[in-house]
Image 1: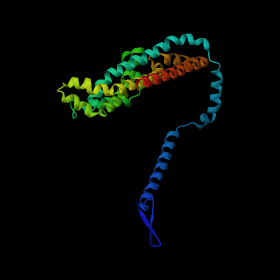
Image 2: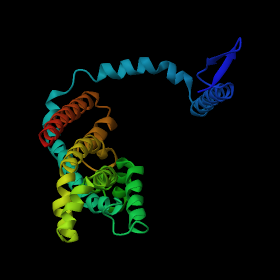
Image 3: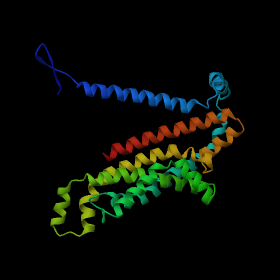
Image 4: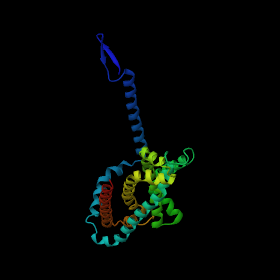
Length: 271
């Protein structure tokens, strides 16, 4: 706690002069960085287009209203495909993420020096690549369709589920593990009776939360050929059918709202 002196009396100061100088230098550096980044982002911007953007937005908005309500019949099957893509992709992600999480957790991995770094690398790799990029790669590899979307959702979910689950594993009550171990239980029995019961509520909550996220992500994967509502959205955008686009937006919004409600109810029931 820095102390200065006024008329020979000690006076408390929040920061030393050196700390204040460093603080101001830090703020100056942040301002300079912001200005530099702004210049990089806007050096190719055509400001005439930006100036005209409000008028263009109003024009497109007027074309999007009213929605084409009769188009909803053609969206039922793509909506079903989107829900299946999200559900099956989440299931695939769970199947792949659970063993990765146990290998990544310090208190359950068989090898801290070898297997744990590999598991952490898998988790980081999955979280680093967006599901849309996964879908682009998979459409190029296995062709367009729901399978590419399901696998893309599954690969993206590994990192999310694996990270939260391995953190939950590392935070379990060690005394319960020690109590089961003291009975002479095998490694499998310790897992069944001491570890799994502690992480099961967290696991269920993480899975439902990820499923909710995957519904939103799967709705746009069709933009790159993975099927579902995104495919209908791309087709409507290509022909400038704005009332259809509005109807698709409303269906996606309604689906997300319902999935949020279901997810909240399930998590509430679990806890």
